Image (cartoon, rainbow, N blue to C red; front, side):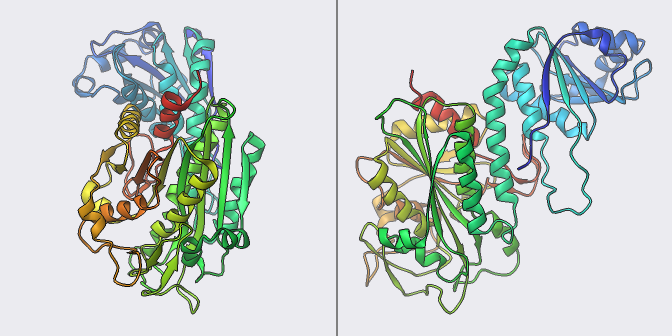
Amino acid sequence: MTHLTPISFDATDIDQIAEHAGRVAVIVDAEGKLDPGARRVNKLTKGALKRLVEGVAFGKLKAGGHISLSYPTGMAADAVDVIRLSRGDDVTTARAGGAALARVRGGADILVMAGGFRRSAQIAYGIAMRDYGFDDHKTGAAERKGTVSIMVSKPDEVAAAAVPLMAVAEGAFMTRDLTNEPANVLTTTEFADRLKEMEKLGLKVEVLDEEALTKLGMNTLLCVGQGSDSPSYVVAMRWDGGKKGDAPLALVGKGVVFDTGGISLKPGAGMEGMTMDMGGAAVVSGVMRTLALRKAKANVVGIVGIVENMPSGNAVRPGDVIHSMKGDTVEIINTDAEGRLVLCDVMWHTQEKYKPAAMIDLATLTGAIIVGLGHENAGVFSNDDALCKAFLKSAASEGEGAWRMPLGQAYDDMLKSRIADMKNIGGRAAGSVTAAQFLKRFVKDETPWIHLDIAGVASVKSETALAPKGATGWGVASLNRLVADMFEAE
């Protein structure tokens, strides 16, 4: 697993500035006011910092923006990085300042003079989240080096505030690593093994193999993987940190390690990107890691269906009728609409076994959601206004885009089948909505539920606020916040 860059929190010592090799960062507010660390830099550089701050370029910086002074006279540092942050700036802006430092750090040690800035832990979080690279399969790739020292007025206090934030970053890194891995490395068995390893964090991990899944009647899930030589699994990760006997929050993830489309074969162009079709399961895994690392006072179960969708002589066909675990029959119209087949059985099993207080499923489910929302927002579908509102609030607080989408009987009617209880697709129109309606048929009336279609946000082709291009780790922070705000014991 990719490790976080080492970050330490130290008492402010401006005498270290002159001799620090690497990079030195200072915080300057919108009015150009220099704190003690910045004043020492200005003195060492014979007023160069002050001239930079009074210049046009700094004046044009947005809050959280960055500008560098390279090879400063009078200092051993290669550069002085100036972050524009004011006392009243919010969490998102402070994280943006940290991310800006991570972008320019390279492999250099960086000394951040944060002084009494009240959101110093959030700067550290921004650095940690953005300082990520997936180089495992590059021959001769340089090991990620360098450390970050953040000097503050109250190091113990800031360090304590950073602990749960670093747990979120670790969970996001796990999600990114899983999503970035190629399918010949992250096979179904390898995925299950990596999750089993999290028992050392205190999670209870149960792996159900195909024999167990067959006994449970998870035929829709099994039909997706039957064309592959790789076995299918369901993995349940349980964190019991709340009150004994309290019903858990259930997180359910789609884990299709590679999706060819099956017999309904996808076009060749871009198919290599289907290594990310297990993104929902990756988010669930990352959230569970975060909760275990920070010892969350909540009961949460994360359950993922892990399969590979391949064409072969044994693959499920368009026109086949499959009996789900619930007992409803599904006519397969398109084998590329496989994620909902995985999720519906896992969701039903989750409700039958765990009787959850609420259930949230995540999946890179439809291209239609990208048409509707692009890469800025995940689609949010729900049968419970209170739960949905709470999640949207959590996502907004973490800067992760999410937008509520509709559900309704007219969409459900589009799933009617002539020969079975339902079809697995409803046609081209409203594709993401009919996919959600399909899943809703497997949600019990008493279960508050959210479906998150993350096809547009799980992996992107350009960098985001806190991640380089590729897997983003979207959802780990938002779901962790939802657990903290709504499900943790007092």
